[in-house]
Length: 102
Image 1 (cartoon, rainbow, N blue to C red):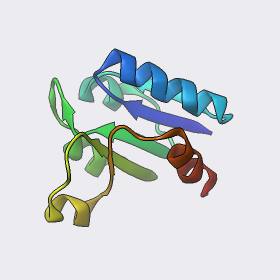
Image 2: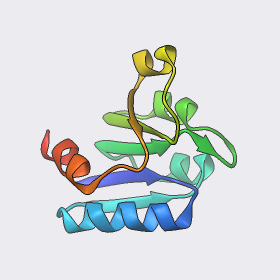
Image 3: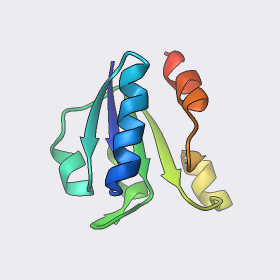
Image 4: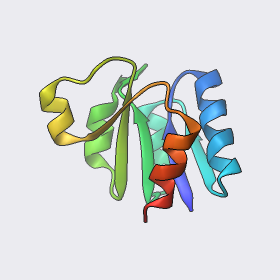
């Protein structure tokens, strides 16, 4: 399954993609909102909240499929009501559980 990963930190993006690939999926890596908007649709997406060209929550609201918003801080209640929020760093076991649910 194709998995969209939108993360501006190259090291975090590479590790995330490696874990996704090791779990048998096909990661689609993007470093910005603009790149992600040009990417093909994926059934599951992981989107960083803070990106160099805007708020990942905006993109998360535009995407179809299952979308997880990634953040380095505890989400506020309003954000948690709108999205499935994951606090970074996301652990491989957590990713495995999320990707196993179809």
